[in-house]
Structure formats: structure tokens, C-alpha cells
Length: 227
Image (cartoon, rainbow, N blue to C red; front, top):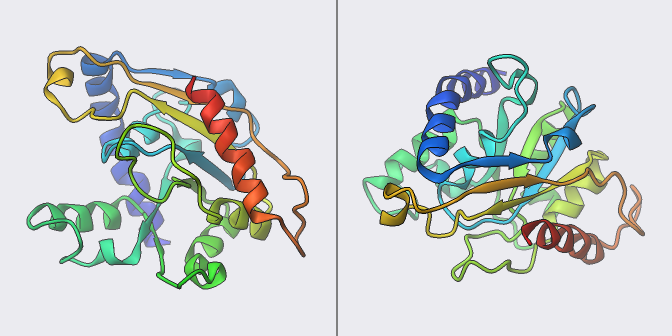
């Protein structure tokens, strides 16, 4: 729809400025793009660790390009809690206004607060996935406080179960405390390491799924890529 077109346009517009800024300031490097061959026209669940507010643009810049522009993989749709779409959200004013604008124009998909009812929480997300969306999820659910990988939440496995889309594990290395003076002094390094797609999880069919076991597999794959 309209949201998707806007997101594609915005991500296209910001791709090169973000990519070149990263190359200049943090010696940005992407590994494993070859693992995405064949996924250009399919729905994909990217799952990565989450260590910074800058993770979204850093993740989007890691997509393979065909020529000048990563057209086949844009727009990347990030998950965001419904509250962040409100102009007055948990982020202090005036930054909250920018956050609301960002999640709207960037094509983020709202997650509802639903007290553990995954179908209700992720209904918009499942709808977008069934239309072949490229979705980026941070299974930890929040930004790490100490730079270490936290436990994952069940949503990532549930989405895979509901849609059959492959999960691509990704490690974001060096993004913790990226918004700091060291970056301005070009002392930081950022690597985005893309793993091989996971097409099936043990004990996970359309009818029944060991959600926790699936999350553990995804998180251990992310942890392995982070090393």
C-alpha cells in the first residue's frame, strides 16, 4: 500500500547518505550477503541482536544492492510497539516526535500490547508477511543495557510458524554505545554479519510449535555470528 511505497522511497533516499556516513565514521563492513541469494522475492524474517537506537539504519544499509540500489530488499519493515506511533510516546519530547515520524515514514509495522496473546499482538505483522514483506525483528524486545545478548522472546518463532517465512539470523557487531565521541573520532568498527537462512525449526509445524525451543535456536545462531 501507500505506507510501503513511502517507506521504499524514504529508504532509497537515505540509503547512500547512511551507507557513506557508516563507511567514513565506523569502518562499516557487511559479511554474508551471499546467504540472501534466492530470497529477493520472498517474505523474510531478519532476526538480530539489538544494542543501539542506530541499529535500524545500520541494518537497512546492509542489504545487497543490484546496481545502485537495494531495490529487491527494500523496504525493510521494522517492528515497533503501537505506542511509538503516537506523537507523545515513551521517548522524551522532542525526540519522541522524531521517533513517531521515523516509525511512520520508515514503514514500521505496529505490534499491539496483548498480554502474551501472540496472534493479537502480531496480527498486522502476520498480514504484512503474507504479502511478502522483508521484516526485521529484534527478538530480545529491547536494547541491551550491557552490550551482551539477552534472552529472546517467542514472537520470532511464532511469525515463522504462522507464515512459513525463513528466519535469517544477523549479528550487529560494534553498535553498542555507537552514539558516542569515539565514533566521531573514527575509533569504532561496525560489522553486520548475515547468517544462513533457517527454513525449518525442530518440532514446529503449522499446527503445533515448541516456540521456546525455536527461539533458543535462533538466539544461539545470533550468538555464534557475534563471535
